[in-house]
Length: 64
Image (cartoon, rainbow, N blue to C red; front, side):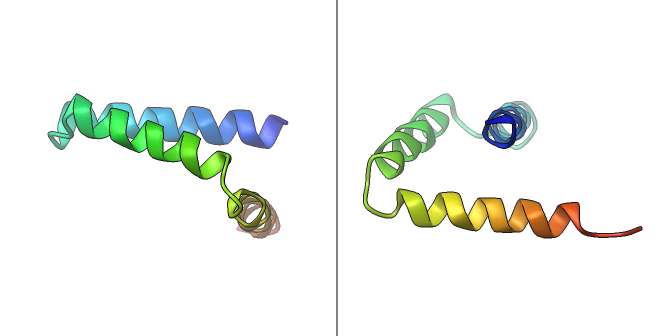
C-alpha cells in the first residue's frame, strides 16, 4: 500500500509540474487520469502492478 500511495504522489507531482512548466493542458491531464482509471479496471492491471513492483524493487536494491 505504501508503494502505491508514494507512486500516486510522485505521478501527481509530475503531472502538476508538466501542467505548470511544459504547457500540459488540464484537459490532457484529465484524459491521462481517465486512462489510468480504465487501465486499473482492465485485464492488464495485474501486469502493470507487477511491473511497477518489480521496478520499485530494482530501484530499492541499487547501491550508490
